[in-house]
Image 1 (tube, rainbow, N blue to C red):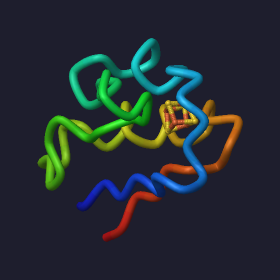
Image 2: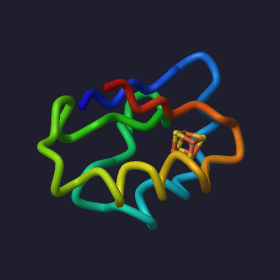
Image 3: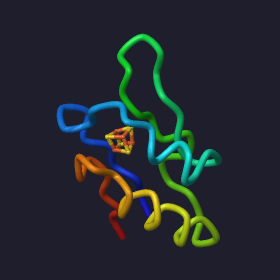
Length: 64
Ligand code: SF4
């Protein structure tokens, strides 16, 4: 599984960080989300999908 953050779409709302702090953080230089683990194992799938669902900008994509 791969987490892709669309940085053009990301508005820095940080919902993803609140939902899955083990997977996301906000880059202070750009105010955009960054994936802390770009290719997490399956144990992170539920958290990753939850974070993608709560992103108001639809900026998170889970591949694979
Ligand atoms: S929830 Fe979406 S818009 Fe907000 S920081 Fe995360 S990726 Fe960006």
